[in-house]
Image 1 (cartoon, one colour):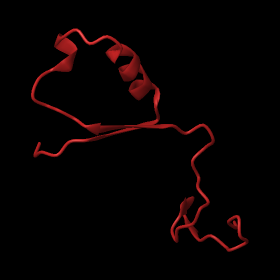
Image 2 (cartoon, one colour; image 1 turned 30 degrees about the horizontal axis):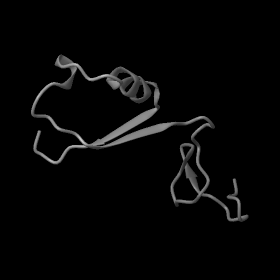
Image 3 (spheres, helix red, strand yellow; image 1 turned 90 degrees about the vertical axis):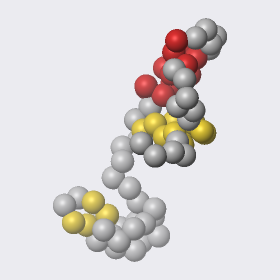
Length: 72
């Protein structure tokens, strides 16, 4: 297999082991990201118009990322 520039891609079990712009992720892959997560109080217990729409976006994404700067 070759990348977009004609360089051969080395594969091990179907995955790119060298690194290139070629990928084995299907078209339509989605990622949702959010900034700082505040873990001090449960947001779902309060009234926050629009929160359900935001959560729906996160649940539909293939990957969701959030930043939590604390020990778990």
